[in-house]
Image 1 (cartoon, helix red, strand yellow):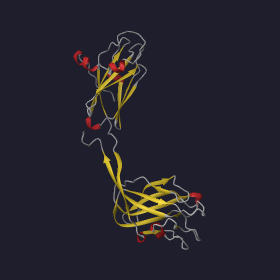
Image 2 (image 1 turned 30 degrees about the horizontal axis):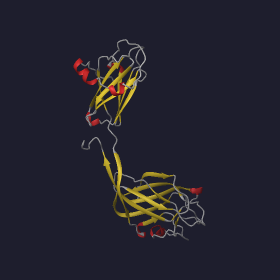
Image 3 (image 1 turned 120 degrees about the vertical axis):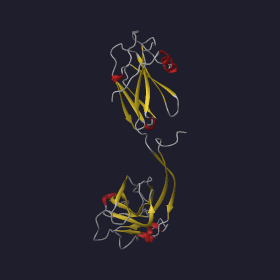
Image 4 (image 1 turned 90 degrees about the horizontal axis):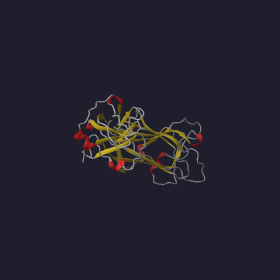
Length: 298
């Protein structure tokens, strides 16, 4: 979008032209012609998440040697100054907020003698700053064997109850015997109460006399409130395949509550049609959400 400009009077010019600490280290070499001011028609802005990007046309030859962009941060009330060479045509301002509306940027060009042009005020808006989410705490939900089910229990070994018996030497195994059942194979939990933000943990089968095949390698985390219609929240990959390896997922925020959960295995190490596992845990996670666009400014 094209932006509004204002030519600043001499009195105001004096108070915004100081970037002396930056100019002292700025080396210039060029003509001493009177610098040409930046025209508003040559400047565009883009509202980015928590940023404002300013872009301007490359100057004509000898138009100026460098330029100064100055603005006041409405959050910190600090006056900030940026210096750009004549070869620079864009500047991204970080840590801005949409809640403040228009930001005023004062463009001034200079020649090699540090003589300044008239000042142009450019107004631009920020995109909304990103919301940040961090974990505050987590608590294991004590699972019982009666809450667990699967679509592919191996009848000869590894009952699903072994996942919650606290014995890492036991294991759960989905059906490897004939007739095999094609993946996905799942672990399902019927909570009978609502849960929301969560994380999962599991331990791979630990006996080192056994192959490292049949470890989950790609898993869908699914939720439901009726046990019939399922929603996939995320897919886990890059999962461990060693003996007795432990895995804990990042926390997941569904944005809704659920009473049923599935750990739905869609692929395994060595491409077996079954998987095994020693232990499984479910954690309720408390998260803290921070939105800089609505948070108190202090």
